[in-house]
Image (cartoon, rainbow, N blue to C red):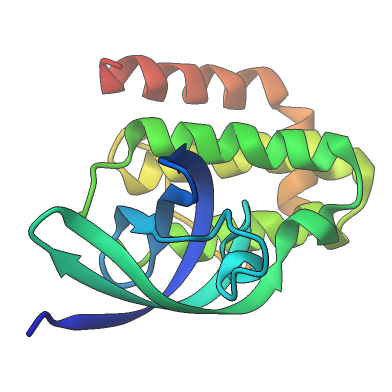
Length: 189
């Protein structure tokens, strides 16, 4: 019998596989970044489909099999895609998600990464539109920092997107962008 993992996960990307299945990139609190197969989610009336859309935060049950991870169950907690409201916010969320997909090693559990991404998504959904640029820079920098690719001082996710911090990033934008670029260059990817 295979072990089941109950995790909180954020769907970062979806890739069609076969006729009705998908390969999901999931950022989890327990296992890290996982690529898991979801059977039949592209079929009409699929029960798991609403909990597995892009940028869905869900409680999931994952099973590790001989061919990799599989989604055994999912319950939607938050649909961030619909909360963003604008294509600008969705595009910014997609860029930070793509950075995480590119740099985060698979199945390396890091409990700091998911709260940072979720705090960033909350800022995109609830924050002022004029703060989105600073929030995106700060989110990218914090992803790099968690991965050890930035030497700046770490910050907690709860106060990460405070208006004072976002104003500081906006004021010193060039310096923060340079730090992000150095971190990406240091990754070697």
